Amino acid sequence: GYNASLQNLATLSNPLLGGAVALMGWFYPFFIPLLALPVAYFVAFHLEHTDPANRRQSLAGYVSNAAKALRNRRMVALFLGSIVSVMISFGVLMVYLSLLMKQRFDASPLEIGIVVASSSIIATFVSTQAARMLDYLTHRQMIVLGLVLSAIGVSLNLGMPSLWLLLLPGLLKGISQGIMNPPLYTLILEGASAENRAGIMALNGSIHRIGQTIAPPFFGLCYALGGMNAVFGIGAAMLLLCAAAVWVMLGDTVEKTHG
Image 1 (cartoon, helix red, strand yellow):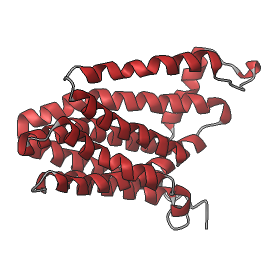
Image 2: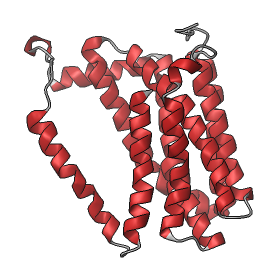
Image 3: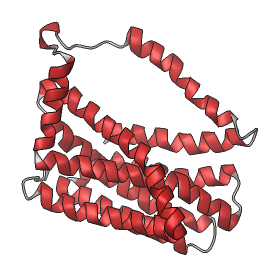
């Protein structure tokens, strides 16, 4: 839950920082990734790790063991939830919600950043409450509920009559992410053995990158064929279909860990 909160906090900072910097010029936000350079230095030379040398594997063996997770339908369900969520976040909300605000309300870069970041604000808080939610819901229920709430939030964007009312579906989307992400990461970790855990998380990270890569052209095609209605409608439908698939594929084996 805390890990998900930090990720949401990072997501929150991007639109706000990018929107503020863009006020000085459209090209300045492209320099923000340079902040990764000092972080890369400290990771490369000062980050301690405790894995013993005798547990190291060849790259081929590492990839092979991680890929075995795809033979498990529960892991497939978790990766499916992960990639669909990322596709909606980066393909629909980051791109077309911003375009929607500009076209309909002539929003400034800073206003767009505030609205887009609103979901991360609530997601940051809700993620910290993951352990408490497990007193009432199973991991399976939390993931499916998050996907359904996300679908509702995405579909509401088209009906908002003013710029700041777009904060309402944004907050609903944030609640959904805060509910869904902690159990999603937890189950992915629990589905991996200790020696393959890093490989499984790396595979999940690769799935995130794939989702980020294919989402813009996929929803670009949707926009070209059907406009904004197609983008948000198809995005919401994908989330609902994913929720149904995850519910079935996870089965009844995912029980409460508290309560």
